[in-house]
Image (cartoon, rainbow, N blue to C red; front, top):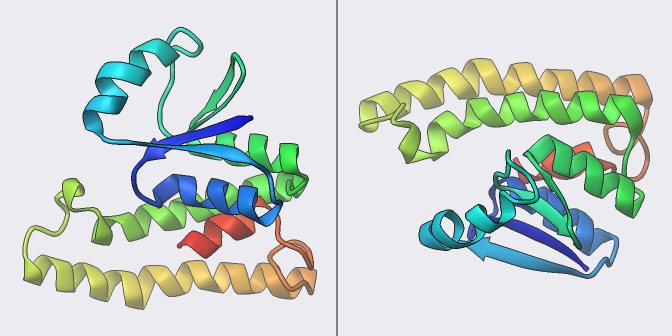
Length: 163
């Protein structure tokens, strides 16, 4: 059985979990807190992969880590991979995610007070969000599809849904 490991939040594992649910694929959802990850499982999993990080997908003694690699691996496994164009979109959507994370993750310390937050919202909502959404609208128009690449969802659709 596949195991998906990530923090106890939706975050980067949400698209992975969605793909599993969409395809009715059984999986074990491992959700970590700080000590469980850093002191217990990460040291053990380093034996399988020196670059281990969250999220990861484990199947037996095989492990895949890093979000985009996990999206591609899992989508290939469950029949939701849309090829190179899907990979391009996964990377593009990750860029969009990084812009949005400046607003929602306090640990980034980009918005230290209400004024900084309001300024970031203004920049993101008036400049960055429309720029990304316009690209996705152009992809949809170019492909004449319901989802970004096809009339059924592929990995990039799940990543974009989470945002």
